[in-house]
Length: 80
Picture 1: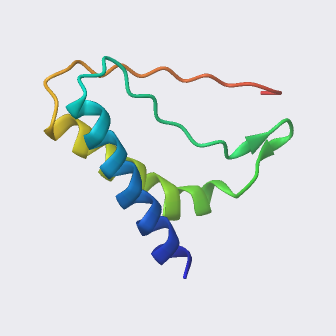
Picture 2: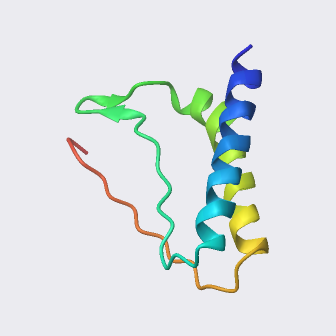
């Protein structure tokens, strides 16, 4: 059930990215809020199992349909 929901969200994100790229946007921001001040809301293993593969698919889709340079900006908040 979780996989079906996450796959549906991924399809929606891919559709939205395609829409915005078609409009000629200069920046596409990706992010999910999976943390709070004391750590992650889910375990790193669950993040790697459920969220990371879908983020990889979304980023691959953007790269495939864009000649733009992709930069990575990681912002960490809260305690280390």
